[in-house]
Amino acid sequence: MDVQALIGGHSNVTGTEPTWQSRANCMGVDPELFFPERGSSTREAKEVCRGCVVRVDCLEFAIANGEKFGIWGGMSERERRRVRRARVLQKRQQAAS
Image 1 (cartoon, rainbow, N blue to C red):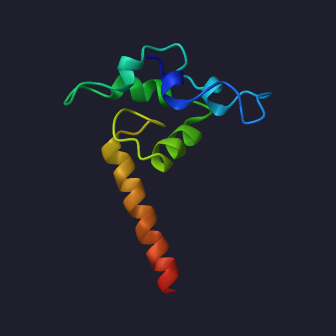
Image 2: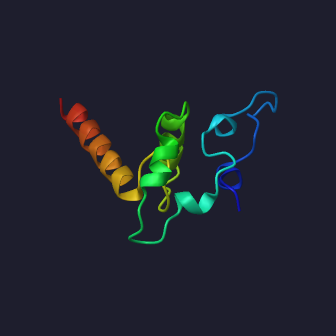
């Protein structure tokens, strides 16, 4: 299975323009790199993500969809959990103000 199959098609809802996925650095890269075995290095996958023009879109996709596995937007699940927690805390603080 390739990364494109995991995250969706090549076109937007109108079917006329490429989506962020089609511009990702990971297109054509072995998806196994982004889903390393537990305890394995994530360095190579994160290197592919570094400098990717759609890194933020990829990260937001993973956070919004609760991706539990793999490297998305240059972050592991543990790193994405920290982002989600920080956002929840920020919303609570804003609501309390």
